[in-house]
Image (cartoon, rainbow, N blue to C red):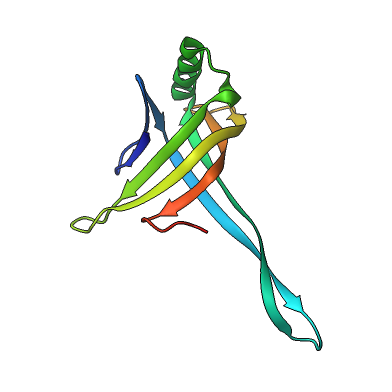
Length: 141
C-alpha cells in the first residue's frame, strides 16, 4: 500500500524504497445518472451509467526527476507504474482523522510548465483512479 500524508507543509507518496513529494493533489469522481421518461413530460425514474474517478498531482521538477530515476531503477515505464492505493488523511486540530483512499491509480498525462521569471518548475500528472475513491470508509458505488 502506498500512503499519502497531508500536513500543513508537505504531501508524501510512499513507494517501497522511495518517497515522492507532491506540492498538491486533487481528485474527484462521478456517477452518471439520467432521467427515464414514459408517458407524459415528467421523469418516471432514472437510470445509472458508469462511475468515473480521476485526479491530478503537482510536483516540483526536482521531485519529478526523482520519480523518473525510481522508474529507471525499477525498469518500469512511466505510464506502466501502478499505485495500488494512495491514502489521503487530514484532520482539524483536535478533531478525528478523515481518510480518503484512491485505489488502483495510474498516470495518464504529464504536463511540464516553465515561464520566463519562474522561480520553480512544476510538472502536473493526471491520474486515472480505476478502483474508485473511498471517502472516510464509504465506497462510491
